[in-house]
Image: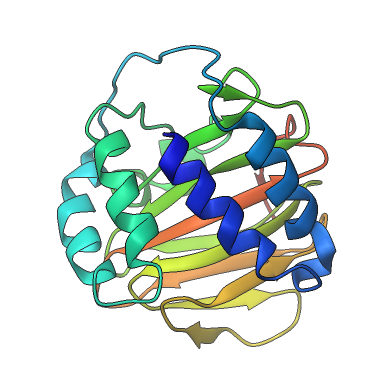
Length: 199
């Protein structure tokens, strides 16, 4: 875990003025958290976790290969989650089978923080994460795969591995994975206690 957090901190520190400036603050906090472990979570798998080996294999040819490799050790015993606002009735069973995330840093997470959440989102091929919003500012880094990312009224645009995508607080945004699983590192800052809601 320490190696993974340190590598993420290095990534964030390399983009100090990008993405609304939030990554510089995140890098400082991650370095302070490195070496702490608030709790060990009970491992929990979701159907989408079966796609992780393929996503990690693709990531090894991308610019964030070191982060993907460091995630492998943690992923073996990870607690996979889904947003409780997303149910079969609100978003459909097909999406839920192709969606999940592992959160490393945040409230009640292995490394505790009250205003920073850091983790990995995994979407299956073709999965459409429909328009949603949340009060926390957010940055994604594409670790593996290619997806189309839409924000506000902007048309969705494909982003390659290594790309950073910034979402200011409360802006509507969406993601559609293309023909490979999408693995994306995310960072939330600010109101991390309010979960995303569909727009």
